Image 1 (cartoon, one colour):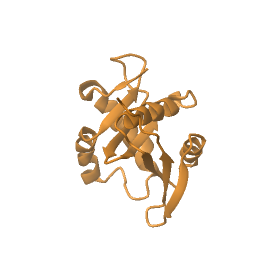
Image 2: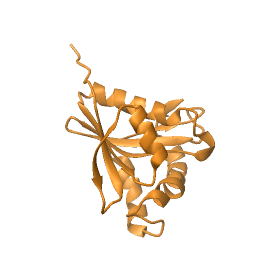
Image 3: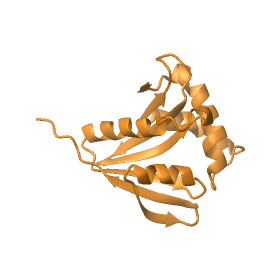
Image 4: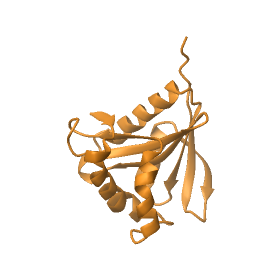
Length: 153
C-alpha cells in the first residue's frame, strides 16, 4: 500500500534508507556529513512524504518526498529498499505524487538524479521524464515531465 508518512513510526526506517541507499550515490553528500544528517528531519517536515508499506503501521519498504513550488512538483528523494525493488513500488510512489501534484494544479514535475544511478534514470525515462540538463559539478542530471493539472469545477 501507499500511504502518508507517519513520522513517529516511519522516520527511523526512512533515515536508514537515506543513509544506506541514497547518500552513497551522492557526489556532494557523505554519511559523515553531520550537518546534512541533522537537516533531514527538517527537510522531511517540508512538503509531502508517501511511504510504500504492507499496512498502516508496518515498516516502510520505501518512500518518496517532494514539495510543490508554484506549479512545479519538485521531487526531493525516492528510495525503495533493495529487498523490495522490481515490484513497482517506485512507479507507484511516483504515480501517487504526480496525482497529488495534478490536484494542486501543477504543470511540471522536476527531479535530479545522480549520474551513477542509471537504474533510476531508466525508470524515470520509462515514466515520461526527459533529461534537460547535466550538472558536472554535482554529477547529476535534471529531468522534467509535463503534467496536466486537474481542473475542478
